[in-house]
Image (cartoon, rainbow, N blue to C red; front, side, top):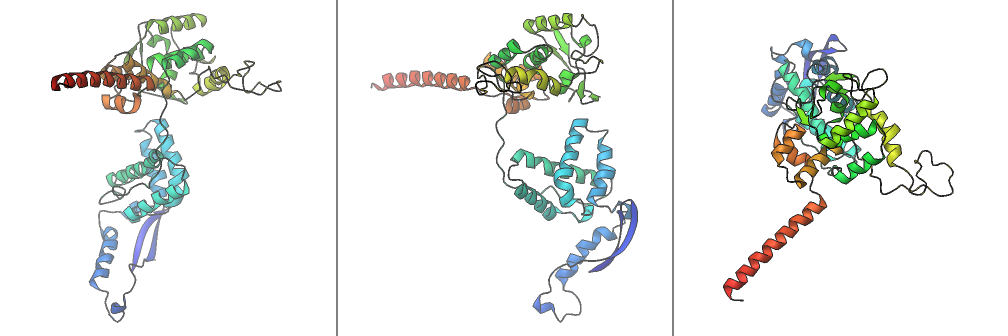
Length: 392
């Protein structure tokens, strides 16, 4: 099949004659002067979007052109900076080389399915959740293309599936003893930051966004989120809410504030320049050196040097599992105290209780054992009752 096509390439409108093979020639069709009906239908399917007046030549672009010139620029005002950075990283690292040269209208479900399968084969270490991000991004790209008139018809990613992949490791939740052990060995401001993370369950960007005038003593109002140098509203409307402060945290924050000269405003955790602290810097400069000390001499792994003994990490100090483990830990520790899930949802400021239950509340080993002990007692009572009634 031959046809003339108009499309945009590197910002320029280009017209070319295009040849495309629709199918192999079957032996019984060799002597036909005209193509059979099955091939004619294939040609109509291929030419229909080209001949459609609803598609302008200027919108016949490659995926790469659309993503970089249309999709990402339009998303800058709609997505959080951290989210958009993740989108760009996935596009650049996995998708651009495999599907960027396709034209939007030529990329269909079989091509999407093959791209995802190729990524799975090339990256056997990817978990299922990691792979799931890729069709989600592609689907969002094509949905935007349809909305903007670059494409007609159904979203080609809808029926594509990701290849089989292992489940990721279970996320971690700090226990209350782990949080308290950190507070005993950390200096300020790391100690105050960990206390806020552990007893309020704030997200990392929300901690960076805290200012002293958000703190009343009884509560902290979550008003902003700071990611790198970008200040945003909190993640959701529900996230912008006050969180009650327990008295031990109040005492710790009041002492920390006094050590800074009792400021009335400005970042709660700030630099000498008055900008929010980098929590990664706090982690590397204060938290990890305090946690990763030698069991024999108390020196950190970086400063152990040529000691008479080998470095052996002190097992009594908690291991670092990331900032979000404090948020999961609070969600996990509160049910153990009898706090209802709906109350935990309000404290964590989730949009709905299912998020709290499915992703944040972890069942601790002690909780599992206690639950089975309760079942054991109930079964014993029921069995004894049934035995006495039956005369055994």
